[in-house]
Length: 114
Length: 110
Image 1: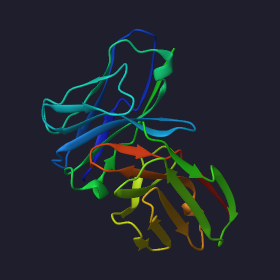
Image 2: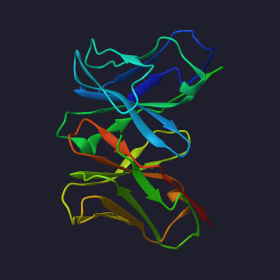
Image 3: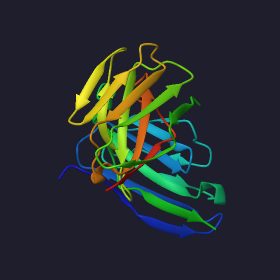
């Protein structure tokens, strides 16, 4: 089954404790992206990757890092989480830049930073 | 970043009624997208629009790409209970940066 998976689905942590949220897709997609969703703000793009070893900032990259060492994986790293990073995070992928109508989203990771 | 405003913010309608929602942007896009998010899940694409003035249907859903390229509209006809969810518009020019609207929460009363 074609899918985007995220782990963990739920995470409660404390301020300053480094964490990684993993994202993996099994569709051989070139493009992957991370979003955060907050009430009243919709989804905002954090980082995206056009291909392996190519990453770029989205609208709200501050406080986040990403890496794309393999095509299928795109982990989101919070080196020193803060309470304002409490949010619902979504990973997404699509085949390539010309396929905007085929963006698949993962199930989401709900992060709480105390 | 670019701001996309959706209205209404929420809607409570009776089953069988038609629904209209819209999305406006402060800048132009060359592609508009409409997504639906069910509770506890990620957004799922409903309709993609690639050309100003384009009108596209997907079953009971119809979406239009505004002629100014700064707005888009989504209509749902004869609503049913499974239409409940949050609807998001999104715009992109480059195919790698996406800007989402604030969402319209739809409740359908049986």
